[in-house]
Length: 192
Image (cartoon, rainbow, N blue to C red; front, side, top):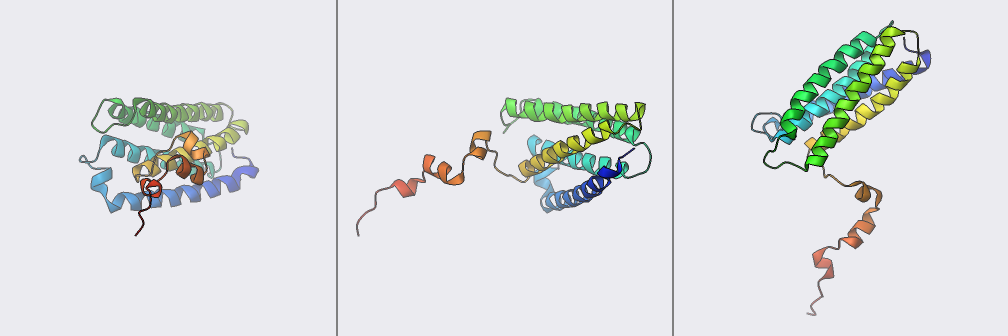
């Protein structure tokens, strides 16, 4: 049972999830051969499946939370289903393949995705056991924020967005340019 204080959160989350899913489908439809077909790289396909899974998951949880009554069973079924699908995709991702990113990075994304679904199932079971306890619902809202971040991150990768280290993300752009000067800027000027 969703507390009245969270109804607007779930309404906004369902709307955001629908919008992000729509944008993801548009981006996939532009060049599906590069992202989701068998000709696409393994990392692109798994990023597409990961982004789709995360965003559908967030949308689905938000939508079923708006249905009156207990929604723990639906959240549990969806969490188990996505856990199994993530395992299947992760097996492909973790195998050595051409053009693979670092194993540490692939392992981190896999473990984080699986952990999200395990935590989701945990809160779903708590909702099933005690449907009037609001604490698991509040915890699910925090989990939804993590799911959205993960989904947007995977979609960004899918679109070819640059991957930056945490240090680069915290460093202002002008400092990055100073520490990595452009080759043409450092070349001595030739008098004409």
